[in-house]
Amino acid sequence: MLARYQRKNALKVIHAAAAYGHHHDWDFKRTRQNARMALMTIRPESGARNIASANVPESQNYPHDCLEWSGDCLGHDHA
Image 1: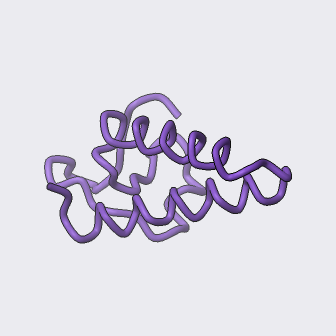
Image 2 (image 1 turned 180 degrees about the horizontal axis):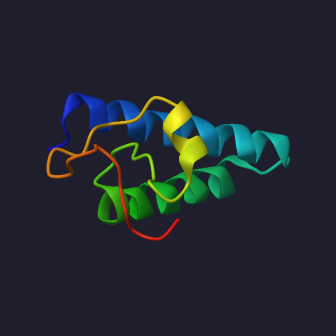
């Protein structure tokens, strides 16, 4: 079960995948496949959280979810 903020982020991913598919004139099946792959990626990679990176300072200018176990609320894994 996803928390409310995780569902909100998952919906943003779905909307972005739909917009990308529309922009590239993809059919519904390919667009849905793209959204499914994106959703399958965000769960293990970020827990469906929007994480700002300490290694990419400009990412901190956008709304992001605080990592409760991180003292500065930022991710520190690569870029």
